[in-house]
Amino acid sequence: MPRTPSRPLSPARVRLGVQAAYALFLLYAGWRFFLYVRWAMGETEDFVPKPPSVEGFLPISALIAFKRLLFTGQWDPVHPAGLFIFIAVLGMALLLRKGFCGYICPVGFVSSLLARLGTRLGIARRTGPRVSRLLSLPKYLVLAQFAWISVVSMDVESIEGFLLSPYNFVADTRMLQFFLAPSNTALTVFAVLGAGSLVLPYFWCRVLCPYGALLSLLARLSPVAVRRDPATCVDCGRCSRACPAALPVQRLERVSSGECVGCAECIAACPMDGCLSVTLPGKRRLPAWSIAAGCVLVLLAAWGVAQALGMWDSPLPQSMARRFHMMLRVGMITH
Image (cartoon, rainbow, N blue to C red; front, side, top):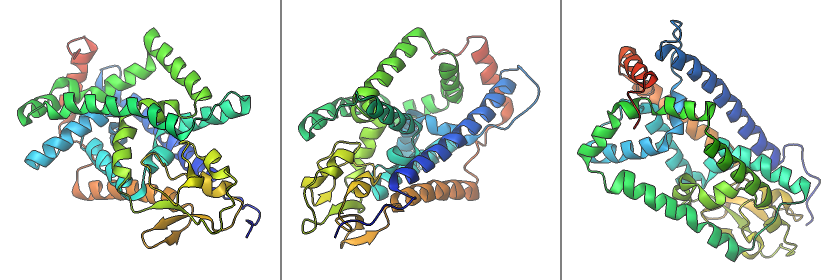
């Protein structure tokens, strides 16, 4: 049966709304963090508490802390919220595919805006399934390199030395400084990635992002997936053309690829009512917005559990934080 006219709350609008809301939250957290850094580096005596959510921008530190947690059972005292966020994102991938990439990640949000712009300019190009698979290989190689250097080759003693080092203590501040005053090389890289995203939608996400590669591996185990009903499919190809990951949805009965971000764009594009749907095992159907809602709930649950356990804020004294930031200010912390 042909689909009835679309409702105002389309999957695309749900996705854009969640992405924009989280981006605004990050801007607020970033501003608060900027004020905290000014105090920590002695530029003002007006103390502003550090927003722990900024530690989500330190996935490598969190990955190393996660290995320490597995081997010693000890939680990271320096960036505890970062570890909670990292585990929440891993759980999100296991439950809700790459929903983090599709709804939460700020880079994914910028990539989606660039993809829309490239389409409007008429310069965006789609790739076939085979080319898409080849393009995804580099990010797995980058992930393997990061995993070897930062996890596999480091024993517990080396991990604890890194996590408790002055460099790791100010790693989030170094990240802020990088974005506030990027080098010419960084600006050139950003420009190339931006231009690439106009031509090849989601260039960074699909080709180079190691975090996305890790989540892709876990997403293959997710019980939630888009399923196609061959009996009602008219083979129009609209679903495949709508997929931001360039997956051949029209040829799949279950979209089990780790590249699926759960955006439900394919469902919105399908002209046949009920042909495509988000499902659980046993073909139990869920609303198209269920992955978006699930991602938000996972993050809120992680925050709530961390707060209840007293593991959201670092237990280390602010005097220690300020001392390390003063060392950073005078160039005593470089690596």
